[in-house]
Every structure is written in C-alpha cells, then in structure tokens.
Image 1: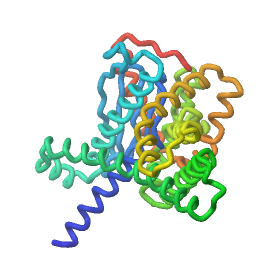
Image 2 (image 1 turned 90 degrees about the vertical axis):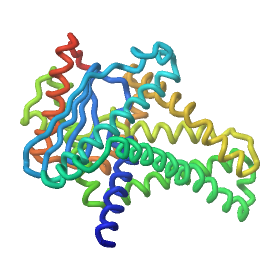
Image 3 (image 1 turned 180 degrees about the vertical axis):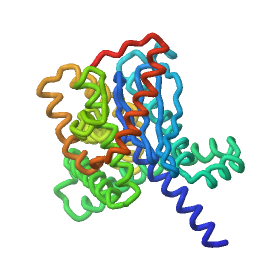
Length: 336
C-alpha cells in the first residue's frame, strides 16, 4: 500500500516539474504558428486554432483540437502595450496546462487511461491543476526571488563592498541567472525530461520547415530543419531575467522584506516589458533581434534534443490538425 502511495506522489511530482518547464518549451509571441512540447507529444497553435497530438503507448497518435481567439479579440483593453504581453502569456499558460493534462492521460496505456478516466472527477482534476499552478508560482518565487536575495544578503554581511544597493542588486541578479542555468542543466539529466526536450526539438524543426518552405511540411524537410529557433520560451526567460536585473538594479530598499515584496510586485511589469522588447526586436530583425535571440539559441542546446522520425510525425500531425481548423475559420496563414 505504501509503495502504491509513493508511486502516486512521484507521478504528481513529475507532472509538477513538467508544469514548471512549460515556459521553457513553448513559444511566447502572438505568432502565426507556434507550439510547445508536452508529454509524448506536441501542441501547435495557429492564429485561431490549436491542436495537441500525443503518441499513445499502443503506438497510435491521439489528437485533440479546438478553436482559439486571441486575448485582444475577447478583451479590447489587452491590445495596449504591456497589457497585451500579459494576455498572450496568460493564454499560453492556460493552453499549456490543457495540453499537458490531455497528454498526461493519453500517454498512459489503454487500461490505465480507462481507469483514470472512470475514477477521476473533473472537479478534482481542476482543483489539482490549480494547486499545481499555485505550487509552481510558489516555487518560482522561492527559488528565483527569495533564495538569490537571501544569498546576496548573506554575502553582504561578509563583504562590505556590496553595501551599495546597486552593487547588491547586481549580485542578486547574477545569482538568479546562475540558479536558472544550474536548475536547467540539472533537469536535463532526467530521462523523462530528455524525452520532452526531444519533442521540443521536433516542434522547432516542424515550425522551421513550415516557415521556410511556404507552408509545405514533409518528413524529409522536417529532418533537415534546425532544432534551434529564436522564437522560443527559453529566449524569453533569459530576456525576462536580464530585464529584471536592470529594473531591480535601481530598487533603493534596504530591508529584506521590502526587497522581496518589490520583486514580487514588479513581476507583471517585467513580463510586460520583456514581451514588448521581444516583439520590437522580432519586428526589427536587426542587431537587437540577433543580440536578444542568441543566448536563447545557445541554451536550446540544453532544452532541445534531436528527435526521431516518430516524434517528427507527431509534431507534423499537431500542425496539420491546427491548420485544418484554421482554414474553416477562413484564415490564410502568412509565413512570418
């Protein structure tokens, strides 16, 4: 009985880790074609549709698809700078959770999936996902806000050179970046996470093939496409951390409590500013875009792996399914 309970706890812990990884494996712009890796599959989205394809234990591919409205189409006030970034990122997270829930169930073997579907109540499932989101946010604040601040404060007590608040905030930012990179490298050692990163590579390759061939994607051109794509959540997270470092640099607070509170309260502002920066850089396609995307491309050597043909087929199926719905809405995709 205890062994069964431990397996259950481990199962939900793995789901929580995957939820934390969502920003790393999903696109963050309001782009025409984008997506993310999920458990044994890929989610793809077009302007007004999204679909998730998952390789089942039997070898078949399960697909779920639905229509999609941009946040600014439902709420006009989300068209404004800073606010629109929060809308796009919020929608990306909601879609990511839905895709993750679907893929987690479909990736199970047939007997276990039927058992879970029969026993699990929707209310419990929604409550569990909410709890996962809360835990993920708590982990983010603890690991990327509290811990760097605590370590910087410890260093400050032993080295007077960082008593200046600008120097202190700079050290805090460097520690935050180091923790992010260390956490990423550590997670990449997991066999299950490597599978997610392989599907991440498949998603990138299929999107690249779509963008470089005028919308015609087959297994051959997907194989030869690069798995490194500048429009990736990894790049966005790095931009967020650099912009946070710059903004936090000039926070004049002396007490530990106010330093922590100010960092938490500024999270929506930093997310909005980061989105606007990425949006501007992507449109300019100049040196700013090359500078902003390059570190993310380097990090994708960790967050992506070369996929096999079966994983590419799943990514292609997800894109094809999203495109089917897009065409019924009268949409005509323009290659970005």
